[in-house]
Length: 483
Image 1 (spheres, rainbow, N blue to C red):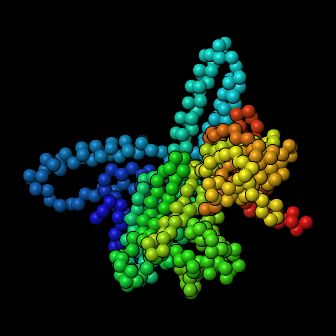
Image 2 (image 1 turned 180 degrees about the vertical axis):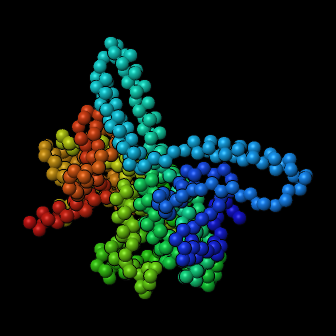
Image 3 (image 1 turned 90 degrees about the horizontal axis):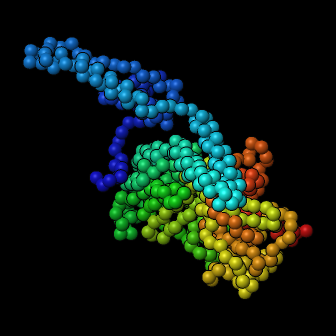
């Protein structure tokens, strides 16, 4: 068997094993620590439902003389095992998630305070305050190391997510009359616990969608010159400060003509000039489905739009690549944690905003010849033959102050939901990590704003929701036109 391949064997479910019973007992031989067992079981049941009891198996049989010496030494071995067990127990400790979150918040506050001190110390004369500046540099390094160590406490391997899919794939493939081989790659890749819990439902829907819509029936695969057994690959890997999760199948791929026809029939704006990537993103439109009949697996038009929205709420985005007759890859990019963000600071008038760095493609200063007006007051920017709609940040948030002409400002090329657009700002300040402060508990939801952070000078900067800016800009323009 190849590494990471999962063979689907017919194993009974937990329900089959404990029919009619209110508990399940199991004897686990060896020196396994209770905390290690609980950590695994807590993924499917609550901790207070788990109890442990030490069992000593000592069958009463006559001991041959030749084994008396071994029998006499058995208690010593048992004592050694008990010592080993106690040693294993001491290597881990169970801590409530609330306490970990509180620790992370305190470390975040420490990092903010350190940034403030660093900004103040940078204004001092290095000749007269050299030792202080050196100490501040050491404090910064220690604070960052502490922050990374504390953040690693919340990290969990993707194995906790991937482990549920072999059975799901086997059962659903059998129900659909298909043969599928599942391969898991990168199960040891770690992700924040809160994101681990929230990614399960979207990923499950993508797996079901690949099995139902992607991989063909064995006879169709053979007719197309493929192996009768379809391949489904789930992979996860770190890419900088993000995690990339991919669902890849070698099925029929997306049918461009069928998607365009279905989108047009549902009133969506489509064009034959749309790129393959733009056509592929239509499957994430609300209510969209190309299934010919409604089943308990698909055809209801509910799911893919929810997948996209849930991933965007986690600070990530979805990309899709497909080739008809060859297969489809759906890629999910997520931040490793929701507590810290790699961001780019930009200025509009006197206000500072933070753009998530994973959405920033490039930045440039536009020339007059690259700006083209459209009907309704909209403008587009030509970048290497590609026409990108321009979104002016001061208009979106109604920022007061002197307005900068497009040719005097900076445009930041952003990508969200498979689409790119140009965001016009006055000035780029720089790139840095920021501690994310959630606003939901104190303020109502503000369109276009996902969170906030505290800068080194003590001021508050808003973190922009780049996936919502285009829609807000479009709504404002339509409202102005109607008025």
